[in-house]
Length: 594
Image 1: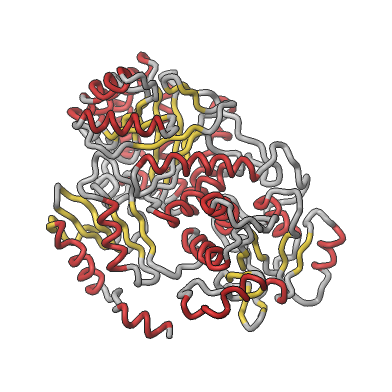
Image 2: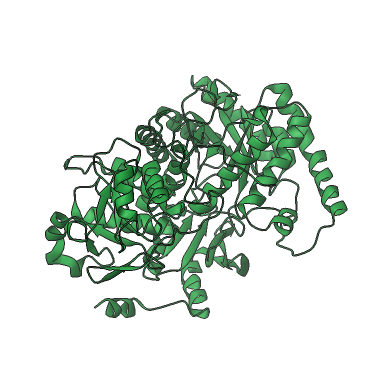
């Protein structure tokens, strides 16, 4: 099916969905963006679970998820829910289900919402390569119908909502062999379950299309919105947004802001979770701030163009290919890596300590680069650039009253593709040294990351952060998180939950300390098999909880070392990286940089 993306890239308008009730909280329609998180306690530990639910609710979390990996765990949700309510807390509880339909049926008795992952629910996932005939495919669908129908019926009877949550990398063998591990496969996997729900006249559900790669996530949601639009106006179900396994610290916040923020600023999304490998309560203020700053970046119904066509395919990543030019001795545009610009003032402030700044080097000084700044709505200015015989870097003028993302999209559409585009995080350079860095980080990641994932941008210029070194670090980290320029080890780390079989924060820190010098390698740290071989997606190596205090190690999606004692596992991971000739000593990386 050919899809047409219904959102207008040059006019912000929130996608209007139907309202879905999750206990006392309504999602979608004209309701605000709802903030979610997930407890990390063992679901069988009632008191610990209740304590974490209350902490999240007190922090402003509006919907709380709890894992229910077995029927026994699901049954204890009764005790958790009763104690939460006895404390006067009415926050809706969500049961997280993956492999166990019987656990879902039990959980639906006690919670306000059930989350199911279509890739794990009933369908096989053994990473087998086989061809499914149409008859075999339909037979598997019938099995899903038989197992999923009882859950839909009990949810309908009890007024329980549902999330049909597809994750990249955890698609079933059947979907994988027909669609591949693709955004299109993610959409079709969810739509199968939605069709069954609708046939039973059940509509209290939301969708999600989560991935650890922001590009994959963004494309998957765009495809889903387009598929729902193609089905008809009554398919206007709300969407839950999240980047799964985003990680911790600045990296986790940046990656989440790229994936979630870019969609929010296109008018897509009704509820969000920022998944950090940190204490769950720390996710809540980040998510709330992200929703706030994204709303601030756009103006409802502001039209900046009526007739321009898109300069990119919303469903396929392809970098806008400009002409390569030389600027201050550095190649910019074409197939060159995305460059980092800075202001002359900031360069002067750090020029005496460039050798101490490791990878975070300023490459081009904006004021002396020949950079041309224009208003893309100005026909005369656009024509003047397009009529030039030579290629020049172009950008948006500071002070324009237009959203950054749609403004640069318009610039990329109207200016001849031979001219490289330099993108900015804001059109209002900051002079406020007291400004909250997290706000700056989230705005920069959402704006610049969104454009990079659209294939727009040959260079980046951070203007929202006054501190020179910090602005350069932010630029490079956004390039890394968006996949535009890999300059350090990339980590995919899931947030902890009740399924986690080891201390994720402590273990991730150990793995970072041991492997942080391995540029260009992607390492996944997963607390359990649910977030294991599938949701690691395109990681090179994986460290996955297999049993209490036992670790399985992966190369790609294949488990190669089993039941390693946890105290030995980091060393064995290093051995595995060495076996595959991907290891370098720290001393070698230091000497290379001298």
